[in-house]
Image 1 (cartoon, rainbow, N blue to C red):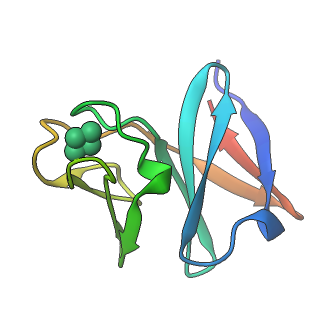
Image 2: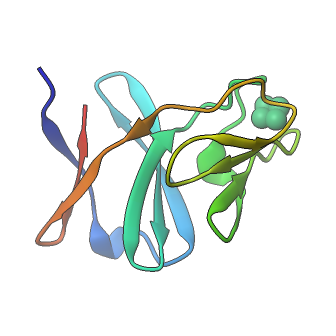
Length: 102
Ligand code: FES
């Protein structure tokens, strides 16, 4: 059964940036995009690059290792070399707490 787990505070993630959080053995990239929060799997399917350390351009994040791009809202891959997208997680904000559904 899924549940929401607190992973960060709103104040910890400035707009247009991301952090990596670990929740239930998963590494998750948590983005602030125009004041809304989005969470996708942190590990790039190509060779394992950390998407939370990638550059953000609009709704996309670019993997820091070989440049694959992903939509931060959906996890879909939008540019190679990653063969697939990444898992997207539901996010909710409760007061100053950011929670992810796992
Ligand atoms: S590890 Fe992400 S593009 Fe290669």
